Structures are given as C-alpha cells and as structure tokens.
Length: 211
Image (cartoon, rainbow, N blue to C red):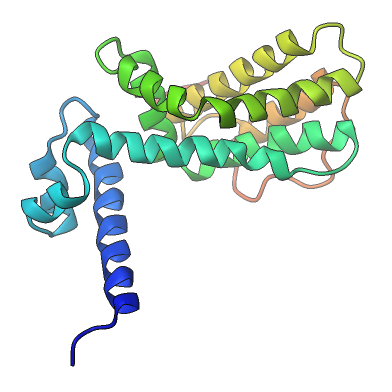
C-alpha cells in the first residue's frame, strides 16, 4: 500500500533532521572549514544525493543550524515578570544555552570570528534581522524599566558579556566556574541572589585550564 502524504512528510523531516544532526556533529569535531559534505553523508549514513536534495552546499547546512540558534535566542521574548525577574531569566537562559547546546554555540562563535566564514554568519543574521531586533529591544526595555541611562549600551554590554562567557566555556568546559560567574552577574546587576543553582555541575573557582 502506498504511503500517505503525512507519512512521507514525516520521513522527509526525519531525514532532514538526521542530516542536520550529522552536520552539527561534524562541524563540532572538525570545524566548519575542514568539514566536507562527504563527512556529513558518512556521519548521517545517507547518500550524497539525499543531502544535496535538502542542502545544496555546506553553507546552507551551516545557515540552517545558525538560523535555529538565532531562533533559540529569541526565546527570551517569552520571559515574564518584573524587570529584575526578566533580567535574571535572560542571564540564566543564556548560561543554560551555553552549557547545554555547546556544539551549536561553538559553530556560531567560529563562524562569527573567522574572517573566511564571517560572511556566512552575517547573511544569516541579516535574514533574521527583524527577529534579532525584537530580542535587542526586549533587553533594552528591561534596562529602561530598571532606570538605565542608556538601555542600548546596557543591552550591548550584557550580550557581549554573555557571549564572552560562552567563548570561555567552550574553551574551558572542565574548569569554568559557571555558577560562580552567574552569581557575580546577578550581583553586578543588583539582582537578588539565585535561590537554586543551575541544573548541572559547575567547577569551583580555581584557574581556567584546558583539558
């Protein structure tokens, strides 16, 4: 019996997700520039033709992953509460994302920073400009409600700080004291101390060393 349109659609979605998962694994292991479509097909266990059906180029694979990363950032738009509660939620959301989705964080950071791949990131960011602006404005609204003299500068500083934390965590995963950094961020913004720790182990403060 022929498969229904719904079943066919589900199979297509599974294949696409399998390819994207393999691409993220390969990019995380080899880096974007060193990775190849052949690496992705081998990791996904599918044919080259199937990968090409969904993604004609390696850049399209990276762009789709970055697109999802940017959509994940937009999750802060759903945070409710007082300005202090929203700011705490933004900080915690960023730190949780950094700790639990490190492969996509590494991909985004590497594409942003490498001169040969920065344009890939810039094109995806430009395509999502309206959504990114909503995120920026939401953070600026929080700072405005807290009485900041220049909410735009505060938004940029917070994002730069959180992105810096993500970079350090990507480099020093085993020794970065994320919980202590979180509490310092809360104190720096005069937020009440967190009532419970982040839901994963965090090393004690010592020295950052790669392992």
